[in-house]
Image (cartoon, rainbow, N blue to C red; front, side, top):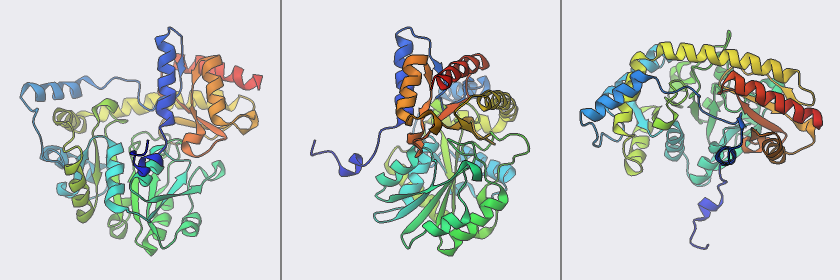
Length: 388
């Protein structure tokens, strides 16, 4: 259709949502499907968070708020970033968005324009390249390897920089690989960004899901010079099991925060009012839930990694964070979409094709489901692998 924007024609549909929809369709037909494709915690939102939103509704908090969010939540986020991450933001530098996905998109729109380039380490979260394209800029993919922990090196960053490079996106802990950058690794990357004042989009949505001795570091905490180049993105979806609530946020130097707030004011306006009060309650009382969630996912991580390590014809790197396993499936001789289609239709196991993340010889498996589902799903996956 000629009236469709050429910008939209450059954008691919989300393969992660496609797999989820296929699995749901099979379930609707009465089929038993073992879902290893999910990107959200299987636990329900804690009751105290729900209660705060219900109370807000009962108090009539159903009207518009300031586009950047209610003052109490912005203050709470600023306090959290100082105490947990060592970053000192004024509440006016915080903008609350309708989910961290919108936070990322607003940040990219605020910085990038036609002709700009954005460096994206690959494998990458599926929406980054499409957001960049929608902003009129061009994604520049930098391949990482399992041997290097699926992390971009300073040398790779420098080699792929041009005069048009405007931003680099760093997702740590990372989706789909579970990689976590150390403070030293982030500092070294930051030194490269400082050469040309390249903006760093730091997506930290999985910050609370790190395991063992691994620690999360916010790159904006590593010095005033990096603070001035960084837009920190986070939200409530993963840590508090609030995916459907759609509350995320950006924190940035004042000029960037003002630009992001301006975009917010002309798109969705504020994040849902009563959901913001639920998010405020999460900040104030959610530490025990986070601790329990982290412990539960670490048990599942170790179980899944142990099972996958014994399966022939695949390779797996132990993730340090998030709740995914990124599997090298090249020895199976199938490209990722074909592999996942066969896995779902023949074995009733849902996984996400690696091509969605920029790597067609891989698939992503999620362990945000019960041990029973994981056990049966992995048994079927092993049968599939042994048959190939």
